Amino acid sequence: MTLSVQQTAQWLTERDGYLILTHKRPDGDTVGCAVALCLALRKLGKTAHVLPNEDASSLFAPYWGDALAPAGFTPETVVSVDIASEGLFPQSAETYKGRVDLAIDHHGSNTGFARNLCLEADKAACGEILYHIITHWFPVEADMALPLYVALATDTGCFLYSNTSPNTHRVAAALMETGIDAAWVNKRHFRTKSYTRLRLEGHLVETMDLHDGGAIALAALSLADQERLGATREDLEDIAAYVGQLEGVETAVTIQELTPGECKLSVRTGGLDASAVCALLGGGGHPAAAGCTVMGSVADAKAAVLAAIRQVQNHG
Image (tube, rainbow, N blue to C red; front, side, top):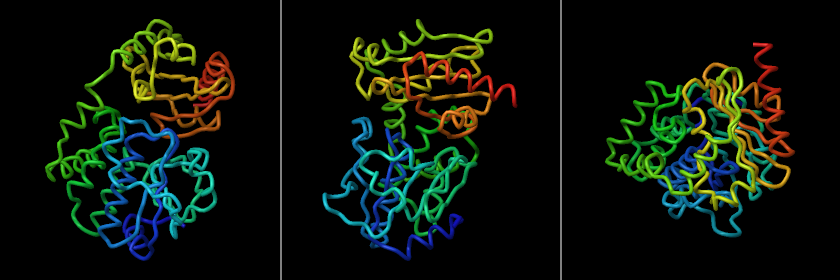
């Protein structure tokens, strides 16, 4: 069943025993939404926890607080945030496939895996939806505002991406008015880079493949590259945003080899439908930013995504 924001707020007040799921390789949006929803439900007098995610990097450690579920917690109600499909569940959430009671999401490619769905695909971040849900109950306070601001800032590239809307700015302003340290968040996520991260970016520039006169850029980081440069998960955070900064690039693809024979692809575009490209490879996302996983080598992944781009171009 599809629920509006108001209906979702009412639905959440009628249940208890919450476990909140985040997606594989969690970003600021899924983490921020999960923590804020957990805190808000607890303020309503509910029992609520976030399922620990083994993929989470230390970059988001300051935001978890005491939200993570204790061992042995058995939920009555399972909610996912910022998850478009069960294929994006981390290993820890595998047992909850087919058991999600409510999905709150902003991906137009959502597969409808949950019994109930609150979907607003026009929102730049799922955090915007969570903000409006919570304000049906009470004003958002600083403890919830900080993770929600992280959600908005990270999913919009510090409000630079084309998905940023007037509503995004209005919500961000309201969150800042609670007194949170937005400057600290933005410096932490956008203005601080390790030496290894800078070397990674240099490697991408030196080795990227350009097509269509530079309008398409394919950049890859193999396991060997990551090992040689000493890259950690924190060093690789949001590396997909880097390639599209090159002047003239309209479609930027970043390929990261996760395990031998498994590559994660992130596609960022300025006109071509990135979601359609990734859907051809079993993934999805938004028109301007999407992702998928390709089984095979880095070379296989490059060939597969370029073929998908050509197919979408030819049928656009």
